[in-house]
Every structure is written in C-alpha cells, then in structure tokens.
Length: 104
DNA sequence: AGAGTGACTCATA
DNA sequence: CTATGAGCCACTC
Image (tube, rainbow, N blue to C red; front, side, top):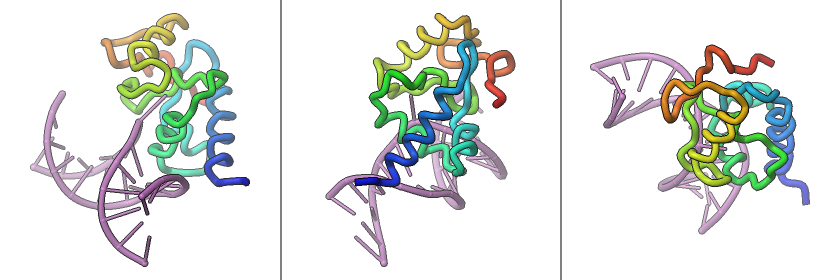
C-alpha cells in the first residue's frame, strides 16, 4: 500500500534530517527541495509526523517563527530544543534567521 | 466532483 | 504590528 503521502513524508524527512545542528530551515525551502512549492504540505507532513528521528524543531516559517501546534509538546518545547543548540531568538517566537538559516 | 482544512507564503491596505 | 484575499497541493468527507 504505497501512498503519495508516504512518498512525500519520506522526502521531507530526508531533507529535514540533513539540517545540521545550530541551523534552521524554512518550510518554503524544504518545499522546494522535495519538489513542490507548497510550504503547507511541509507543515502538514510534520504535523502528522511522530518520528523523533526528524529534527522538526529546526523547521520554522519564513519569519523564523515557531509553530504553535508543534507536534512534540508545543512551541515552547521547540524553542527549548533550539536554544539547546545555541540558536539565538530575537523574541519568544522568532529565531535569528540571519545567523542560523540553513542554506543547503 | 466539490467543499473544507492545513506547523505556509506573498501581496495589499 | 494586524487583517484579508489569493495561491498552493494533498488529504478527508
């Protein structure tokens, strides 16, 4: 039972896993890498994600803002994980993309 | 086939 | 900063 869903998830996970520590990527960036323009699907996929293998906390929106509905334990958990990797926040919800944006 | 939904992005005001 | 509308594409009903 192969669904496109699994195919997309696989690709997305593969890309996200490549994000090094201390760096973050945007949904749009990941979308381009998996061959789509729709950043929503990235969020959709990660929301359905239960894999702790995937560092979803390193994926943020284009402003560097974290997801309110973060799957693990809410945005506060995501922020904590990022700060644990030396990622700087400009406020409670935004990371410093100027310093930490992952450029493939 | 159509309508609703979504961890997004962009343009306008 | 907020709000609205459009674009986007796969999922679910």
